[in-house]
Length: 180
Image (tube, rainbow, N blue to C red; front, side, top):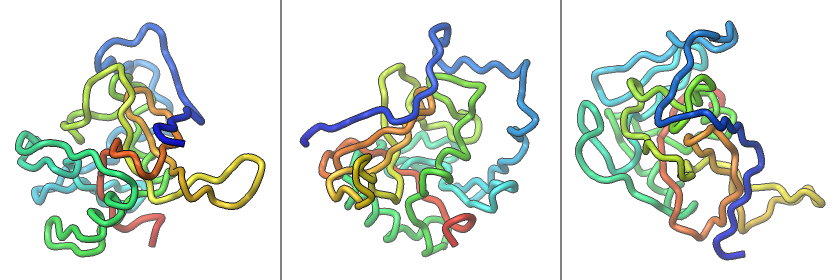
């Protein structure tokens, strides 16, 4: 099971270029003005009630220019979120897949996220994976597979299955919203 990575739900475009955003055909269901950058290294999402860490775990600064993004296994990602006291809050956690998908920007590719709001997301055509709080359910059984977790990749906005023991997960903390 080592190195297991499956794409469960992916959105691909063959004409996309680095951070190519098509804002001409904005869906009314996607609200681009919903994210507010706060002065305390957080982002408030007015449509979901979520507060996000603006920088990925390991980065800091006004534009996330300081530090280095850490890649963790799933257990260490959970611990990092639970131990965080970013901006004076002590209730940070990993987002569930629905929450993490709420910041995917379907009009953008490489990465499929608003880089003005979340400036440290890697700009690459290779997948990189952000941790979610949920393990992966097997397709033939309804029991959770203890070896696998969901992850979201912002390179094209896809959902993947990741081996929980592999140190490949990036982390973006969240608080409030759906998980409360």
